[in-house]
Image (cartoon, rainbow, N blue to C red):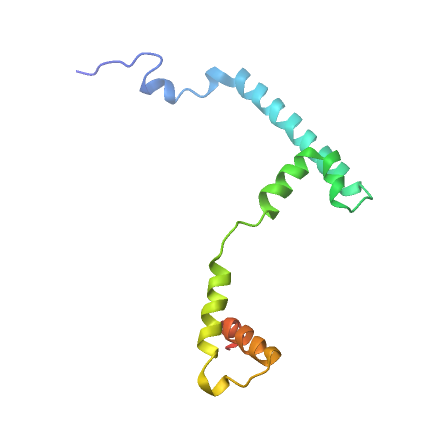
Length: 116
C-alpha cells in the first residue's frame, strides 16, 4: 500500500512549474544586483584618485579591501627568524659583522625558495 504524499511532501520536491513566477522575480532581482555591482566596480575603476582615502567614496570596495588586505597579527614569523638566528650563530660564526650575520639568517630563512 502506497501512501500518497501531501503537496508539501516528497512529490512537491519534483514540481518545478508551480513557482515559475517566483523564479522570474528572483532572476530580475539577480539581474538588478549584477547591474549594481557592475556600476560600482566601474565607478571604482574609473576613479582617477589612487590614494587609500578614495575607498571612502566606494564603500563596497573598501569592505573588500579591508577583508583581503588586512594582515593577521602573528608572532610566528618573528619567532622563526630568531630560531634561524640561533642556528646561524655558531662559535665559528661569532666574528661575523652584523650585515653578514643578517644576510646568513635571511638566506637560512629563505633556503626552501632557493633549492631547485
